[in-house]
Amino acid sequence: MPQGLLKVAGSIDLNQFWPQGESDADTTKILVSVGGNAFQYRPNATAAFQATHAFDQAKVRGKVTKPCIDNKSRVTVRLQGIDAPELHYMPQAAKKKADQTKKQRERFLELNEKYRQKLGETATVELSSLLQQAGQDPLPCTVVTAVDHPSDVFDTYARFVGNILVTIGAQDVNVNNWLVEQGWAFPTFYTSMSDAEIEELRTKWEAGKNVANRVGKKLHRFVRMKDFNWELIYRGKGAVPEPETDRGPVVMPKLFRRLCVWAVNSKAGMITGNFQKYLVTTKDEFHLTDDFLEQGAAAAEVRTLDEFIDQNGKFRLTPDEMVFREKPSRLIGPDGQPVNW
Image (cartoon, rainbow, N blue to C red):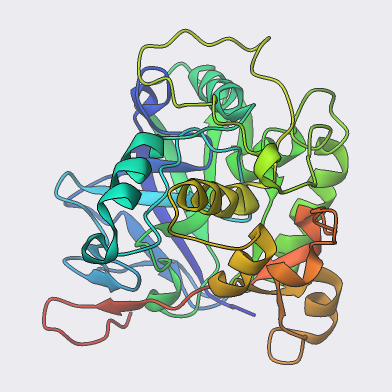
């Protein structure tokens, strides 16, 4: 497990959250202070933090290739260990455009909307409301992540994976923990997390999963074509929140995104077979949480999502029972070489 700790001092522009902006409850952009020593690293708990410039002009190479810090001095953060209901998810075509028939392309374009889930809007509004209580905009924050190497910091989509810490009044708030404990997000574990980080979120989830009208109580375990709501479309910036109608069944977001791709492409004629058959092709690998905590990533049995859907289309696991294998990424410096501290 990682011994080092990286922290980044920055600020959050509160206007970025829906409905003023488009950010949702589990991915946000942090405005990192420029020209200073925003990134601080220590290799172990007994060492002092020291400024690091490992990420200056560095790029992430994974599923995408992007700079760690964009041209507006922002870092895109994926809130570690959590997943909130989708606010706007647009599925990709299962076939390259050159391989699509005219009919498939036309049908796909008819269906290809930004889809959302129940509670996706409300979770975003609630997070924004929490942060606004600090009375500062932009709001100072610290992003922390336990890592030993710079390449462990960003995921394959060039998102900084960490916990956001803010001060509201006299109270220090871990945003990741708050979202799970309040029932606005599911715990979603990855092999990049330490045992302590997983256990902490599991404890928060014990409270969060029992809060009425929130994600734990509304968890929908069935993943069939009839479980996909075609009418839930992203309403865009400026829409008026409707918390009373933004309630209903919520499929685990990771499954929802795959259900969305499968449903749209099936109706467009680009995918055949049921959802379980489609999941075989996605190869989403994970460990059962108890097995991972007992044996570690090297020894724990590797499982896939398709194994856990029964003949009735019910997914048999809950979000806290899985630890997903992080997809690889590399950090490359401006000289084209791997980045080190």
